[in-house]
Every structure is written in structure tokens, then in C-alpha cells.
Length: 319
Image (cartoon, rainbow, N blue to C red; front, side, top):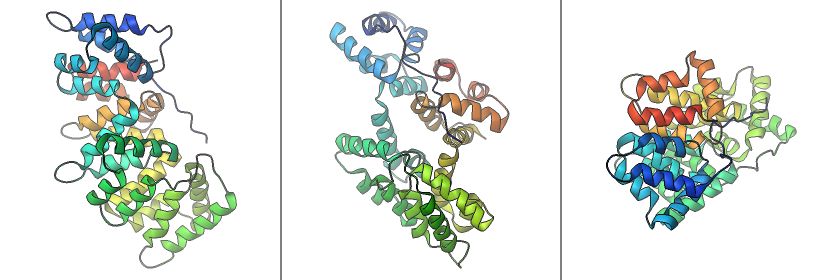
């Protein structure tokens, strides 16, 4: 089944960066802030259009739009708006950096960002990361992770995956047999074989490998991973499998977990809504409802409030 991503945010037309920058300046000038105007403009423009607004704002007023927004807004609402104003690749780099900063490592975030990307997207992230932080992503990641999980992420980050669309049915049969021999057919698991195949094959190729695996073993690849792996490696492998089969379902599950139980993982909630809005947030919304029998909109409304809620719902309802 071909995955057709449905975005919720698309470029607005007609578009007038000068008019938008005037409206934003007026919304932040004087006493009080007109948050509604800020939401109306920034959630309905593409990221490329927001960059044009930022540039026009600086020309017109000699001020930095992001600095002005930061001084007027606060809390989670500010996080959403500044996220929208940041070029996507740079935004993901910030989240990768935060996931590895300080004590401990947020493996779930590393897995979500790194295991869901094509080779082309990965190259862009690697380049932007080193430019921004002066240190190669692979090097920092190696110091923050360990074992087979580290090996898998290193392979992904170094960009060994075949280009999108690369398929070889004969090779898929061989790879399925290799996975079977490395897992269910032996005592213990040869994680290196799993890592190599999962990190090198294009997502289209992996889809064929998983079909062949089921044909060969009578089990799904998910069942095999469940039996053979645990902890971060298990989660990363499952993320790869889910993204091959349905990226929208993967992100829908991530959103559900971010809002399930006591408290909300706002960072994950914001990151997914902001970063997927121009890619497939419409598809994620549909999958969320299909899997959990409730709308994503109602889940977010329950978990958030105020301008923060309004901004997320605006991105969700989008185009």
C-alpha cells in the first residue's frame, strides 16, 4: 500500500510577507499581546513563508521577530510558536541536542527522529547539526548511547541506507532468510545482522523483506523483534518497522503515549505536531482516530489549555 502523506499546513496563497509582518508587529506593540492574531498568521503559513515574514519584519522594523515573540509569549505556547519559526531541520537538531544534553539520554526522542528519516533527510540533519553545534552528530551520539542500539543509530546517522525507492525482490528474499537465521532459527540473536539490514535497506525494500519474512517463518517481523530484543534496541527496531508500514500510525502511537496516564509529555506533543504539520499531520490525525476511536483534537483539548491549546488545534485543523 502506497503511503500518501496528508499535511495540515500548506503554503497560503495569496501571500504577503510585508502585510503579515505589519500585523504581527501590531499584535505585539503597546500594552498586551494579541495572541489570536499571532496564532492566525503563524499556524496558516508554511515554514518557508514564515522565514520570509521574519526577514521582512527585520527589514521593516529593524527588529528580530523571534526575539520579539520570545519577549511577548511564554510557556508551552511560546515553545509552539518558536518551533514554527525555526526551519524544520534546525528544529529537529535542537531536539536531538536536548535529548543528549545533561544527565541521562532521552532515547525515545533519538529513536523517533533518527529511525523515521530517509537517507536524504538524514544527510540534511547531520550537516545542520555539525554547523549548529560544532560537533558531529555521530560522535555525540556515540558518547550518549551504547551497545547494539548505538551501532544501529550510528549506521543510520552515517547515511548507509539505500536511496528512497530502491527495491530488489531477489535481495529481499535473501535478507528475510538472513534475519530468520540470525534470530528465530538460532539460540540467541545476531543483532549485527538485524542492524545491517534495517539500516541499509530503503524503506520500500524493507517492506518487501518483511513480507518475505512472514512467508518464510509464518511470523511477522514484529513478533520476531519482540522475542529477540529488548530495551532501546527493541524500541528502535519497532519504530523502523512501524515507519515502513505506516509512518502515520507510528506518530499516532507516539502522540497517544505522550498524552496517556498522569501528566503530558508536552515536548513530544509539540515536536510531532509542529514537525509533521507540513508532512503528514492529516494522515496522523486519521490514524489516531482509527486506532484509538477518538479524535486527536479531543485528546489534545483534554490535555492542554489556553493559547497553547489554540495553537496546536489550529495546526491540527489547518488546511
